[in-house]
Length: 251
Ligand code: PGA
Image (cartoon, rainbow, N blue to C red; front, side, top):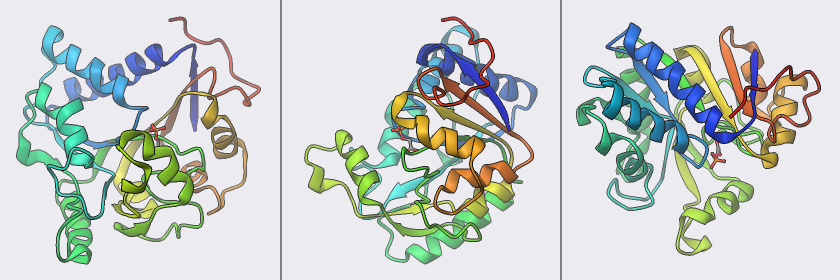
């Protein structure tokens, strides 16, 4: 695991965007794994800026999102499809048909899950998977206790996760109880490179355990220790429990 500590969220977002842009410039047909939530929003803003000001071209790029809530239609304002439309896809020149997100309101969700695995394989795997980390150590919606051998599937959200995500909803009770998520196996087997972003003190303990703790399903992100090509990009606050942090990059 390569650990890179930066001073602040803005630098983290710029650094992450530079890594994504570097890949797309080397490989026009890059396949990206994308995440939702607060953490990658700065990355997406910076990618939009690079598209507008520096001609970063997404026309041949394919994306696979990690997860989607069960029971929300794609055009529900709280769906992850809507999130991605709003925060990235509608503002760059990506082709809609190359942006994959599991459909959370399909009648046959197990078919959706099988098909998602197939689509990722057909795309030739994922060149760069962006991940956030939950304060409980989840990646995607693989909550503590998740079986690392599982692929894309329907999961029940931890109470902690529903609480953390309530800020995006009008009322906390509206947060769905279930989601479709890529599994830990999906992420580990298909991603050639993983970039995990962590910002803020609330992530410090999970980040510390992910980097320094034992590999265990109590902290799903710890399985990333077993992946050969992971870069962790964290700001000072998220990395505060990691002793050997080197010199942070300035803002
Ligand atoms: P956040 O979520 O970026 O909104 O903190 C991260 C995650 O739950 O993976």
